[in-house]
Length: 157
Image (cartoon, rainbow, N blue to C red; front, side, top):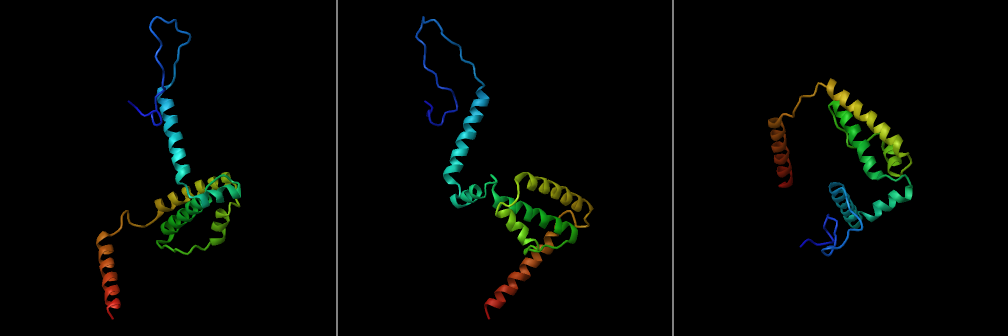
């Protein structure tokens, strides 16, 4: 028998034989099952969520995960930088803007519009980029070997 706590079926009781029906029940089984799954997943997320991060989301009152949004912009901007220059700078020149996002100083809709525009710029930059389609695996392996050799020879001194 299915566990009623995790079942995604409507539970019904039997009607004794010979009884006159008083109602008919019809329901969207797939829709109900989908709703039950989403409901269960949400409550599992609530149990496991980072309380401090959630409190930050509630505190700034913008109703979005500001840390996640910061990373969206940081990663998209880094991708654009790679496409345009072929280089990657980990320290971001627009740190103040990213911290403003983290503090929830922007409206969600504004950030989504800006992110969508940035995605379009990134796609255009990669379409026009002279970067190779794939990295040179052999060159990367040789670089890794050389870095490890340098590291171990320096550590043994």
